[in-house]
Length: 188
Image (tube, rainbow, N blue to C red; front, side, top):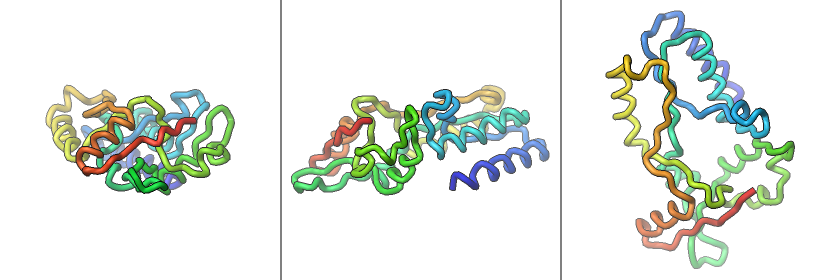
């Protein structure tokens, strides 16, 4: 996906420019590699960030929207899974998240070679809060951006509805599911 995303995204930017579009709303995460001066690399973020940078560099009239993690991820790749002892559930990063995490590097250490990756059953957030938003809330915001281009063209903005730790997300899931959900407290 990452290998094709950048050329496809740049092609879309070129077409937007050649067609003289008056306002493009681009949504994607920031380029982590650039933000950390090469210390961290998250390929699916970096590729989308590279495309955003390209849109800006060729002068496309646009607004960049950086959306937080979707709450709906807790129904899919981050869904709670039964703990090995069976008494409670933990937040599972899922195979897709673990595979993409294998692309990350920190201080020139390959993430997939770290012992924690071998199990890869949790989000390595520690007690750092994570922004989140529901997919259902994004459309109204994007509509407002399109309806008021003079206010938003040339700006980059983040969208978030909540900023919670993984344990706080687990507590909300526990209440909603009627089952105990815990953060596995994995950090790197």
